[in-house]
Image 1: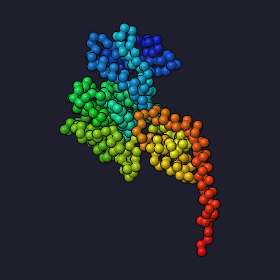
Image 2 (image 1 turned 180 degrees about the vertical axis):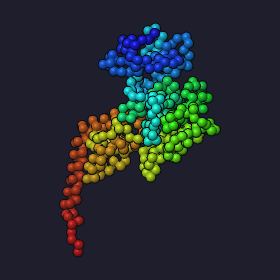
Image 3 (image 1 turned 60 degrees about the vertical axis):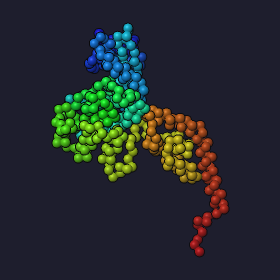
Image 4 (image 1 turned 120 degrees about the horizontal axis):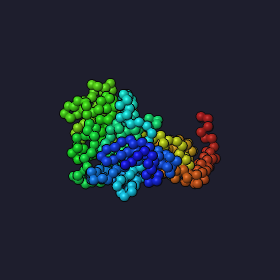
Length: 387
């Protein structure tokens, strides 16, 4: 039996039990090897009463979390067997904050603007998950699995129901989900990216109404909530499409749902809006784009940056790339994660420091030389008085 202050693996000191169900316990613990840094320890007891499906789900959660790398998903830190193999443990990054369910239970009511911001953040997380190869489906999005952290950052937690899409069509899936938030097809063993979108929509409706979706009236299996909120008609329509009972009538992807929401926020410029918001972590000066502007533009698919090849204009284009290059590159290419993007730009910055200064001096001096040659052959012809 686990108790407070007990140390697991000679490293993780249990501080507080956060939850327990289906033979699984979740603890807040201190990592003694990392200056008592707080972590989340999840333990599955492999007793006789533990269902084989629960073990498969736990094991799948461990394996998939190892592959994920997103700033709004708690990172996998460790996993282990305890003693004689009677318990399987998972250690994750601890996210300080409160779940949206805790805030609802305290009587907090969310405005439409707050709900929009939460929707934008979760959709970006789902774009990352669903566009992995194979795609990853969370299958249990609900207020208790969304943490509101520092700076109003939203984190998606508890991947205990996660499923990747390596299974062939028609294969049997473990049926999981939470009534009210999960779409009907999920309880029939069928799952798709739009299933996560339904759960997100039901969650957002809960935030707006303060009423759990299972307690709201339904008509033809669709949640009826429009009379209970003071939201804009466009927001209501968007949520209704997210929570369409028929899978084929929902948005087919998180990317399409995000584009629709962004278009609603700023319809006059919807054609110019990026399909993915630019994360704050990547904003800032880009030395690689500034120092090696012509080559950097090619590999990052920033075609406007090709103006850096033009003498005279190239210098000013390089400055523009230094200032806005990170944002343009994020929008122009498909990146696996923010870390991958930052690592890519770091390599360019290193190359720029080693080679870029010399290359740019040659290019800019060549441009000045060409200008001087031009002026020598056509001296001040542009200043000649009219005849």
